[in-house]
Structure formats: C-alpha cells, structure tokens
Length: 100
Image (cartoon, rainbow, N blue to C red; front, side, top):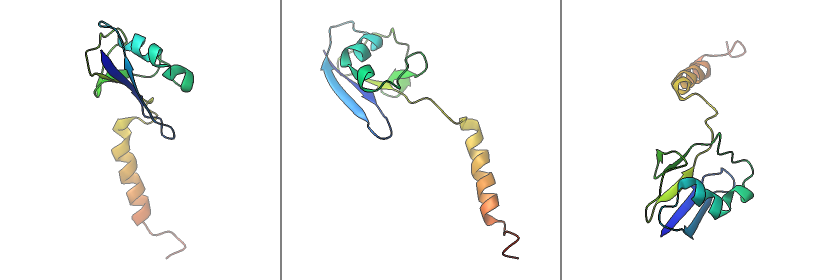
C-alpha cells in the first residue's frame, strides 16, 4: 500500500512517498523511509508522531494513503503564549524614559 512520511523541519522539510506491506506500523514506516538517517535530530522517544494531524502511538497500523507525520518538539508552553503576546504588546506601547 502507498503511504507517505513527512517531517516539517524548518529549514529542510521532507515528504517521502513509499510502498509498504499491509499491517505496517508507524514505526516500521518511519524506519523504512530512511528519514532517521537524513535527520539525526529526530528522536522517536521524544518527538511525537501521528497520522493526518492526530497523534498516534508508534505501534499504530497504517492504512492505504496515510500520511505519517513526525512532529517537532514543543519548545514553548502553549499556555504561556497569550501571556507573552500581551506582555510584549504592553512593553511596545509603553513609552520609554528616553521618549519622555
């Protein structure tokens, strides 16, 4: 069956198409794709993986046409992003002592 494996590396994204046997798992597809050799920064113990935007365990069996995705690790807590944006906007709108 035909599937694809993708990795959204910021500088070198990859989308590899390959043919795998029925019952192939996410882990097997990633290994077979050769993507781990191209991107040594991928650590399957750390990077989450999924199919079409939904996180799945490595043991998940794939179906025809599935797109396996390897996600970049989250480096910022999403809960703090709105707070950071508000703080940055507040700082930008407050005149500095040099302008007064």
